[in-house]
Image 1 (cartoon, one colour):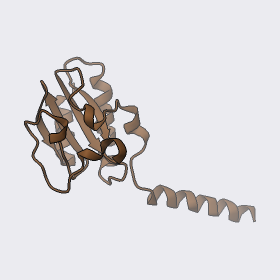
Image 2 (cartoon, helix red, strand yellow):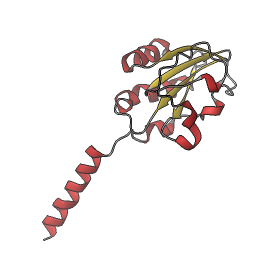
Image 3 (spheres, helix red, strand yellow):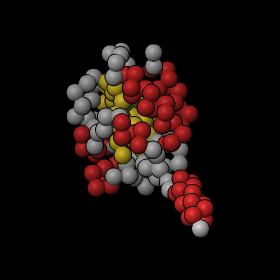
Image 4 (cartoon, one colour):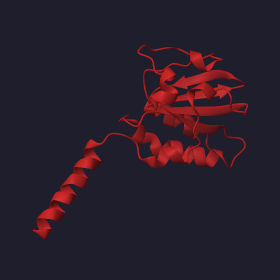
Length: 147
């Protein structure tokens, strides 16, 4: 009887690991930003990484994003990286869009809309200068800006 309980518990745990969508808590370890505050960060240049807990691609680059953010905190030449949880629709619902919106050149948070995640935004001197929406390009961008 005891072995059956352990087996059932093990099966439930395995199902939960494979069925529950989303990223681990790694993104929670990176400085967060909310949608209305995207342009309120007091830095000349920085990244905003947009993810959703239900995103199937986000966990695939999570380590790259975390490692970049951690390294950038200690090196002044690297733009800092902040994360925005698109899944938190109470605070960040305005960033969601059903259509593709090219917001390079945006200077207001209301101009930034995305239908996808992950998404990496580079802001320099209060202007969006890059908006990257593919996993490979995001990793290449962060690696090229790394040490």
